[in-house]
Image (tube, rainbow, N blue to C red):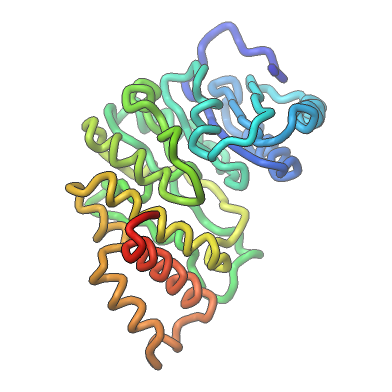
Length: 294
């Protein structure tokens, strides 16, 4: 269903979001999108993993904000997150697709920065920085999404490409078939796609100025960490010659060392939440290797 009628000219970039029963968060995201320097330069395409009646309810609430950018909302079926993103991106009119999760609020000018990046660096995937709002921070703890790998200059690693704040040429996304439609469960869909984009020849770079606030901690969720560890073993099995096991931190040697250290007296000096998260990730990966499936 269309909430705002698309403009006559194709936007430069399509913002893609998949969500489930987080209407208030999505409305805050709409407000963040409205603060971009040129709201007419992008469109927002969403897929809501909710019943059709709920999708219509959100569409009506969004319409009251009279967004200055084009919006297209799809939904009605419960799909894996990757498949939901594929559905949202299927009719993207922008030459760039920016995957932007519902709880990620782009800074003013962030979308413009992603567009400028792709104009300057063709055949590349752009990774925008994520930061936790200060009122959600616990002590000096840095969330996993804040610890991105930076190589030389603006060079980034494919492991940092996620659906939270990453952009890619639409043609490249379609050339690799988008997210794996058969991928189920939490975690793994992003690095699996990133490895196929890398095999296509894309480079990975940080997008200066393409920052966003991530409204939520992840280091408190040990259950998701366990699932992610298991899913990343599945990524490695699918791409065995990519060296993914070391970069994703699920190589059996790394897992054994991490589990031993975190359970040692020295490991108990680590922030308890971080320790629980890292142990759960390692345990999930170890179980996947042991069971022969993820």
